[in-house]
Image (cartoon, rainbow, N blue to C red; front, side, top):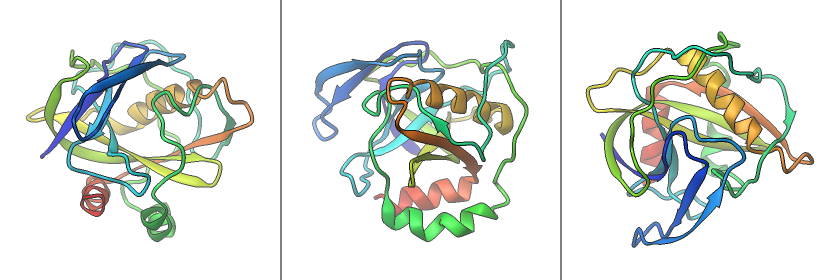
Length: 204
């Protein structure tokens, strides 16, 4: 079980900026697209860049339908959005390098997946602390830098089908880099729950 501090509510373009020690709100940023799911960081974690581990809180609902444009894992996309809006620049190099080759062959790796609609998102509000269970780890590349986003579901709530979820998040992540066309961004695979737990342990 992990505890996630919500910085952005599902459906909102606003991401609060918080001191991750005191949890005091220090400002906000406005994303180019609404967050498809609640987003925040895992309390009690710290990556090499000094921030907590990023996390998407995914409700276990059924697809609402509606098409989402999605990137394929192999494609590089010159991006849409700001690194400051839902992103930290760079990645955890120690962890990333150690897992790069192994990650390519994980049983939890997804290929192209089907394009899917959005999933029902729980109505978590900014500033809320939510207890949840990690079920996957999303790879994200900014240039050659590899980063990770933990995927978690509320306690007692089963995770949704992974291929359409990956595509939904890929569409959002690519979209919010629109303001930086010089930045090559790429969404990779969804790694397994075991990989998510290992990354969280590494970051504590």
